[in-house]
Length: 181
Ligand SMILES: Cc1cc2nc3c(=O)[nH]c(=O)nc-3n(C[C@H](O)[C@H](O)[C@H](O)COP(=O)(O)O)c2cc1C
Image (cartoon, rainbow, N blue to C red):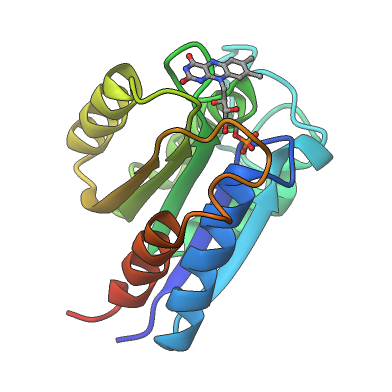
């Protein structure tokens, strides 16, 4: 069954995370899924203020009005959320964490959505443990289903992942498996 996939891109560069996203998207679209991607660094997304006063309007659930209003309707409708990020200080980028915190506002109106999720990450080294522990714990606590991870290590230059057929193929394959079951 074809699925609606939302990708949150937490990388500010057209580099390694972007390459993983492109390969994943190619696979996912080839399998008949629809993909909406948000390049978070191009959007105005303020950090959560912790007001706990959101949720009044499900279309625009946060008390802050910014580009999260483009994400909320897609988030509500999607089946799969793909978290994509470079490894920054052994965890996800601030851009991605910022958007994730703001997704809380939708829970204040809709309750907790049930989604599936995947993780795409690139790093110069290979110490993904803190990031994957966080992702696994998040998915467990949200009662979401993990569809898989692609962790591209050794990404030292802007084009490392694009020049690595194995990493590109892993991302394409993961995209292709979405909606398979
Ligand atoms: C602020 C910052 C922190 C980083 N921290 C790590 C790190 O903890 N471990 C690591 O292996 N690479 C780290 N890197 C390197 C990036 O993860 C790596 O260059 C990655 O390929 C960037 O992905 P991108 O091309 O999508 O931006 C860091 C880079 C930056 C800019």
